Image 1 (tube, rainbow, N blue to C red):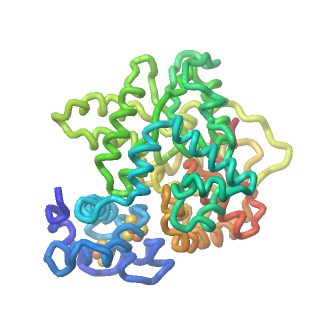
Image 2: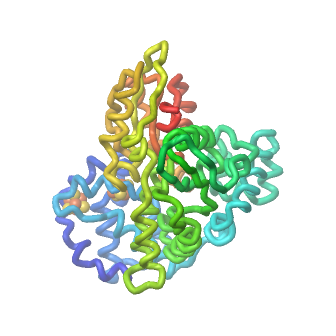
Length: 413
Ligand code: SF4
Ligand code: SF4
């Protein structure tokens, strides 16, 4: 359906401007085109024929974080992020996809082995200082137009993928009955492996069987870019890996993956040959935070008390309504002094590949997060999405803070 279908929704904007206060992009730039009111006005202009699809609309369409914060502050609750997403999809139909996205969504993300190989080449270039080697191979192009800046976001790439060390298969755990399928997101697979190792340890304690799944990318990066067909292809590939009746629950330690896997049924509407399968899979997905909330293993008492704070990933708080659970888990841990982070549910600017594609803007959003972090004096900043871990770690390095950034699994295991 093209964006004109949503004209009535878009027209509900009464131009009150209440969305301004909640929008991380507007608060960083002050530009009207970067806030919900401005974006909706542009969409309306397109539908009314006062504006053409083309370069003028690209920035306002693609610099939205899709964080959804505006909707909570909007009296008619206009779902601006969803509308922007639909407009992105139409933009791609009219203007075409970029070659870098074709490479990423069609040739790399559907194939974990190729992703592992690409990550290894990037690691070789980055960790040895031979970034020219990786650049010559054209692989670092994946990480954005602005290579030198993009390159600084990830401090270090592991040489081996998580699933090179922890092969897909079935492993016996120490739990009594639960059979868990572990969906390994791309971030954990090639970058935040410490989080993956901590998750695996916890799953081994909680579950009777741990199935490390042979999944590919969940499809969220393609979907966020507006490439619905690529997202659907990735989801279809995953449905066969996730449809096993031999697991009771599918768990992921990436809140972004969890939120998107739960939406699989929307990608295959009723009547589609994969709809029932998608409903079945989506219904069994659980965020690791939710699993831990219900099955928290015993944690050793720390000698030195630590001050800990928490950042809400957009896909945990707004995508899945997971807000109370991580805080209660952290407050229950022995030796932890929990301190709430101001604006904890504001996007950190990571937003998947946003930190790479919109590096300067993303850094401004991140700086605000770091300023809030400094007020807590936290020893550890905890979150539940690998993209946030990467972005927040970059922020902590950039601001010279001693705070450690950890996935919630790492605090418990
Ligand atoms: S979704 Fe987020 S970034 Fe986009 S307009 Fe709304 S508040 Fe701003
Ligand atoms: S808060 Fe909602 S109605 Fe008000 S200007 Fe923003 S998008 Fe429009």
